[in-house]
Length: 365
Image (cartoon, rainbow, N blue to C red; front, side):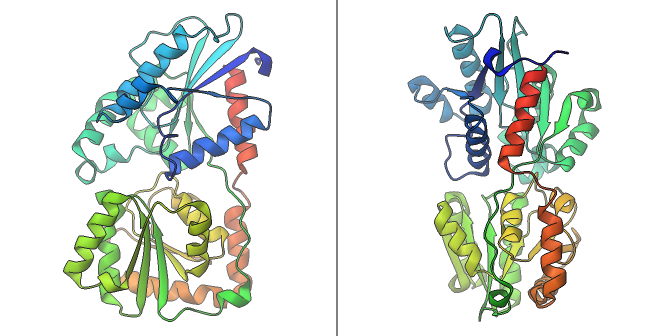
């Protein structure tokens, strides 16, 4: 099939996800936007600064209502190209306009980050589970191309919906290069040991396990960057477990403040049972911080032995504490440690490379 030139493309993005400035989805969308702008292409956000769309964002079913209203705006707009291609790209797993019939020169691209609500039904909200249960298949069916952000996500989709496998393509999240902490500084361990976790709250994220680990070793202090519901959960449980004084809680830090927390940390702790990509853990590695995580999800696709330590899903709190203790020793083996970091990061694309791949998908439709 002949590729469409840039001049013949009109790119429309659903604003859902981009409206939350501290989320991983916002990082994904804004970084990809910057990569396309560098290529002279400006995606149009459908719903941005639209009064009615902003009201829809507040509804529980926003992942269904918002993209359909976005699609309506696109189809009614005068900016669509009659002779070119109009690309409608949705980024939030199930938010494509599956109720509309395919028509004319409109094409849908859907980015799927994970299918965790279908894998952990009892550890997500019931509403989230229902939306995935009844909307994911319809969204996949309507999409002309499906972008999966990790091999693990593509594998999960293939098992659940093998009939759509040919539509699916892996385009990894981009990796932002950071200035690594020097080996000399990494050898200077903090007292007490500083652990770091960056995650929104969901039951499958393992927040309670993190506090059990903290309770099990008095030399650990844990900094947690999370959303408001995560702050509430950790504050309540921290009091119950008697570890609140060794918890430092932050809500939605900006990039510079978050960088500061990475640089002050000894080990990154990821107690989540599932991750569709795990960008905060990749960031930790890029700063030269060892990662301890539970194996069996997307992080297993990327992290390497020597700069990270993986535990089984059935690992006890004692095993987690031992894993963290071993991770603290990894920087002492500096040659192996930094070589492992390079092996982790070298295969990951830059956001510019991601933009090139996504543009190629648009042009091929």
